[in-house]
Image (cartoon, rainbow, N blue to C red; front, side, top):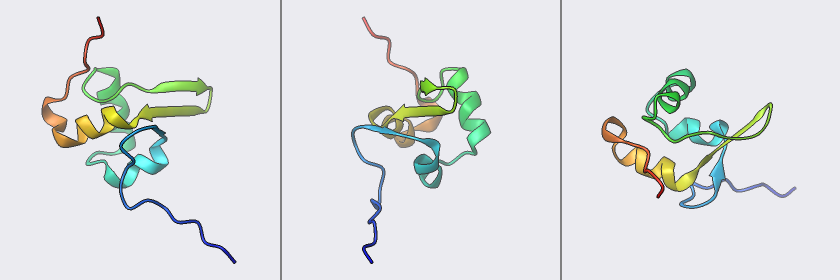
Length: 75
């Protein structure tokens, strides 16, 4: 039987769901959700009622310095 290999770290690009982010996050899911709402963590991207993703590049920026993370303003 073939085993599916899971990456040892969060991919640098692409999108991830909370189930993937969980093991790298220094905070709980609810705290992360509140931080996202206040602009202190990456913003969720909704693909449906039950499907939320986060941009991996933004997650890496946040993980480098969670206390000072700010959403980049797009011009």
